[in-house]
Image (tube, rainbow over the protein chains, first blue to last red):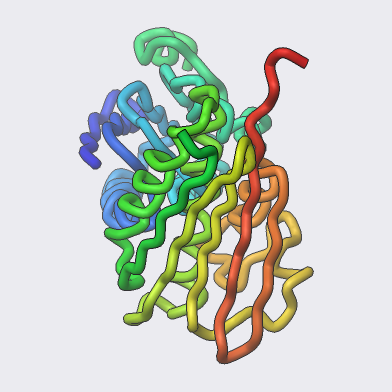
Length: 112
Length: 143
């Protein structure tokens, strides 16, 4: 599991590659939480999941936890380029009600 | 070629082994004729069941997880067994959104297992362990 973060104005872009599960999610959660704490101006979270090949409830729990924080900041959650399997599990978990799906990060940045 | 086959795995309840378990079972399951989505369903269901053993069965402490997968004809059967704490209320544990660790977990593990497999059977005894049996059948595309 590899990931990197990029700050773009009020948006935090998280680019994920690999599998987000019970083993890999704690470190990702830690990093994400730290960035939220150190950058209080971050309002939106853009998850670039093009390279995410697997996610289960352990990984989704981490994303949902950050969504609660975004809500408090009045921000939005985006998923960019989710593959069909990842999109299916996101939809089944109810993420389509709280997040927006897009094909490109630049589109999202324009929309915000 | 016979239409029956099986594998058995024993792994320590280490979080690193969750990926190994789901990949190994999916690789075995791929001997049957699934769609890509269905193989992904199997991976998610195994990941959830093994994760449950690691987190809830053993509380992230050391323990043994036994994994069995077999098929007879088009029916795949996966059995995940631990010898940990067990589940006091099996029905409650399977409710959508129920979790014993609400600050970290979504409570969707069993929901995914039920959604992605045709049958999920849970047998558990407190302080003895939990056995999750999951069945999925290959759809007959001709019918």
